[in-house]
Image 1 (cartoon, rainbow, N blue to C red):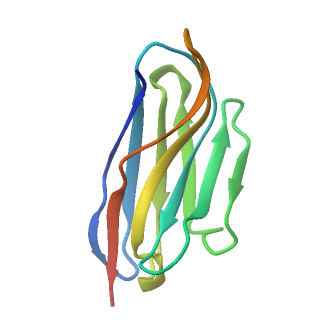
Image 2 (image 1 turned 60 degrees about the vertical axis):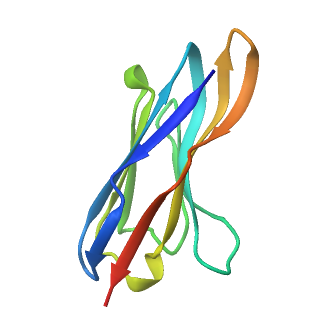
Image 3 (image 1 turned 180 degrees about the horizontal axis):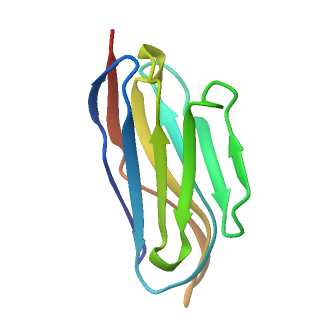
Length: 120
């Protein structure tokens, strides 16, 4: 059984910073890609950033230059450093692990979500 456990959300003023962490646990052989998605009230879930096991990254245009995704493959952990936060970054942030190889095969997993609230 694979679980993704997120941490680091909270309340911050506009212009501030937060760092999210997500650790995948279980009998994992390999994870192809890890990333962060977010969902604001009344909106669809959207991609924030992803990173492959080789270090290739992809960012939403709205966060480029402000957010940085990184990954520790040995710990199956992904991080999201969020700087210069804006009110519009307020959302529930979900960790995603895609291409997770275990003895049971390959699947995609989601974390339970962590709230990020940016006040003006």
